[in-house]
Image 1 (cartoon, one colour):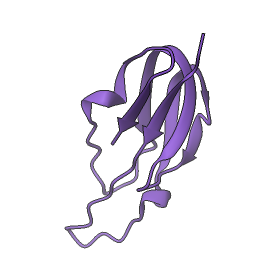
Image 2: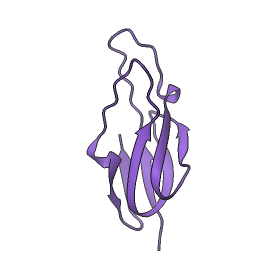
Image 3: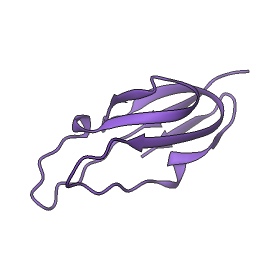
Image 4: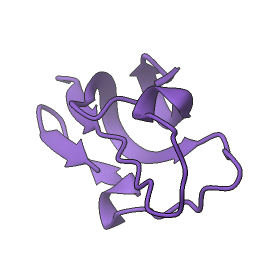
Length: 86
């Protein structure tokens, strides 16, 4: 069975006086053996190797920012596929 790849992209909107960068947020992936499973956010994306199955991408909460997730943050991925997760 071939692994799949998630490209996890962290975007930060600083429209209310915030100054955070994507790397100020710690991202994590739950699923079938993700590697890496925890990493700093990146606007260009972090390549996560994961085996087929259900997965979930989340971040450790960073006040006062509000989390918004795309539909690709929690779904199923097939063998050999690549998915961009903004």
